[in-house]
Amino acid sequence: MDTDHRADEAWVLGVQRRLYQWSKANPDDQWRDMWGWLTDPRMLHHAWRRVSSNKGGRTAGVDGMTVGRIRKKGEQRFLDRLQAELRSGAYRPSPARRKLIPKAGKPGQFRPLGIPTIKDRVVQSAVKALLEPIFEAQFWRVFYGFRPGRSTHGALEHIRRAAQSHKRGGDTRRHGMPYPWVIEGDIKGCFDNINHHYLMERLRKRVADQRVARLVGQFLKAGVLAEEQFFRTEAGTPQGGIISPLLANIALSAIEERYRRWVHPDPTGRFSRQSILSAASSRRMWDRKAGRCVCFPIRYADDFVVLVSGTQEEAIAEKSALADYLREMTGLELSPEKTKITAMTDGFEFLGFRFVMQWDKRYGYCARVLIPKAKSRDLRRKVKECTGRSSTVSTLGAKLQELNPILRGWANYFRFCFGASNVFTSLDWYAGDRLWRWQRKVRPKANAGEIAKGRQRSSRRSTVRLWRDGSVEQYILAWTPVGRFRLAWMGTPHFATSSGEPDA
Image (cartoon, rainbow, N blue to C red; front, side, top):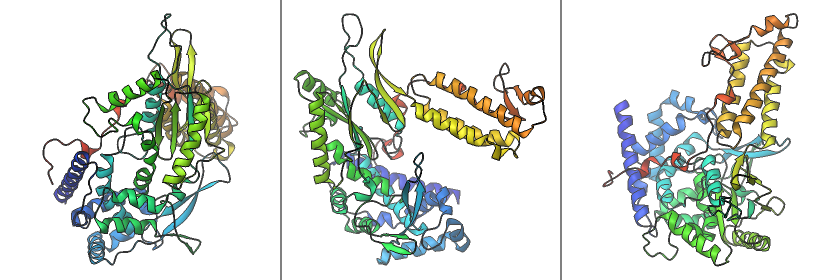
């Protein structure tokens, strides 16, 4: 069985490599025959393994089926029936079950989440395995959301590098900024309002197989079921679907295309000896020297910023032009209240981080990614909730096991920020103090000396005492390695690393 699994994965990888290499070499062509690959048993087995290994497999769609129930009835039987439905044309996607998820930090606000059936998830996973290599070969490097090997840290580092001036004055300090203004883009109800006709037009430019395109259109029109009421989906991509992030990226790539001259290697289509980076950056440099306004976008899913090199008036004009462009091209609207024009020296927040140009007396203006104070307050509130009076029935070891994942995840997310060490040290003291107060509530009759026995030498650093219960000890944020994120750390898709001829 393990041999069959590896053979299936190798076959799928070979297909993806072939699609990626073809798409890279033929950016204006269409692939005309994908249905055989989509309905191949090896592709369906690959998709099933992806879906069944996900924790979401325990959540049922409108048919009430979970991965566990399908396994009891027989995986192979399920996949054989699904293949027969696809090949006969009898397959139709079911409506997604709608569930409202509370928005973090926004009491009373909810995000609608669509939960497809397991059968639909398997088919979507198979479709994504074929579409992703085609479009990944054409996606530009200025957006990061829902792309293999890319992360929020890469997007922030890209902004930092673009905003950092390399020109120094006579005193060796940086006195200027390449982009003094930034447009903070916020699309109103992005995933709910993407125009289906526009999205399918972009899809068909690269995929000429009508059966695959028709299947994607059926997923878009499948509708949702909420409180036993059926609602049609005339626009948008259902959040929660496996294929939805890829479809949203296909639609929203129009944002980068507006700034093609400054982010694409050769907008004229002619051969250029320069790399993608140097060709685009050279045009940005020459346009700035010529006094022309240059705009540079960075996008993560539906969150994006546009760095503007001109005046505030030019930034205001570009914001208005961008709103008209998005409305005409995609049917999406920029939120007038949340789409702001901000000076780089005032700073802005993006993806949970704070970005600002700060004056340093040694180096001049420096682009820095900081931890917002609100995020530190949120972590303190979580720690306080975990160590409240309502949780005094658990042991110290159980409390540490509850608290450590929160601290570890927070530290790993913000470890690449400027000044992270000082923030981590402050939060370590707070977490230790809250654990002390929690112990006083758990053992009200114990004196301070008895409670202090819970602070023992760390197994990692014997000179440090911290809260510990057996092998479980308090996670120390300050021990998390900090530094600047490097774009070279970003991975490449597994289907993009092949060399030589395609093996499928």
